[in-house]
Length: 404
Image (cartoon, rainbow, N blue to C red; front, side):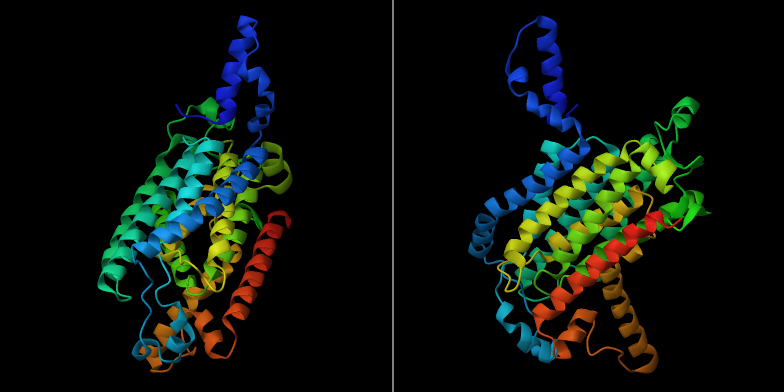
């Protein structure tokens, strides 16, 4: 089984102690730091950032040489917006491969890749990223903004989300199903909430120190909605240079904190009274790798962008964040922490609904970031102000963990 650097070093260190010799394990005794989740999470963030900065220019040059430029919608489709975004024509897309690669490498080096929470988030991210890659490739091949059909994309999103949801629901370490009574009592498997044992089908919210409702197996459709919804929400947000990337940083960082806290017994069950699982803290390593990779990608994606993440990145990030929210049993909190993503989705829903029912539009254009552009805000103003909102919402969401 693949383990962390610490596990390899510790095994070698024990072997050297038993033999009475001093080898490389004694020389590199500082690797003992890798036993701590906090150190490995921070290292994963720095490492993924460094990887992004290092290989980013090469990937961008390769994308340019392959002529995978981002198709821009015509003036007939978006009117004035085409004038504002005309300069983006030809900017390479599919940059999401840089984010995915950086996250996976950093997680592989610093994290326990067979931890069920890390595995399901990483696999969901890769699967959604592959779907996004196919969509981006189709757009580039057709040389227009029409990629994979909406029905086809939604079908495969459903399949990916269904597999992830079933894994979370039936996996012993997460749900407790199949675990012995002693394991459940000791908190080895499944979740605890204070002195209560909670089921994977329970829905929790920090303001309530007991589960709000228990859905049982019906939690699976709920999980599917979250993963698909979050994946599409990030995709809709990815319309301006660095907007989705910057919001990803605040959301992923918040959930890494939640995962770390939820993995520590006394902090989660005695102080905060949030769902606890002894395996969940490892997810902080993966999420911090995502934070670092997002910062690294933002280096090239900030206005004016040298590369776009495309659906390859946005669907992957959304799938990972939605799955992380489920794994930490803080699904409803995602509405607050990921408030910018939620606002983008709601603006589209309201716009379409209003036009179909009243033949009138609520916004000048949806998603809502384009509405503010058409009001006269400069692109950089929209991006930075949305980042500020995302940070404030993330802080508010974290503050809710200790209201009562």
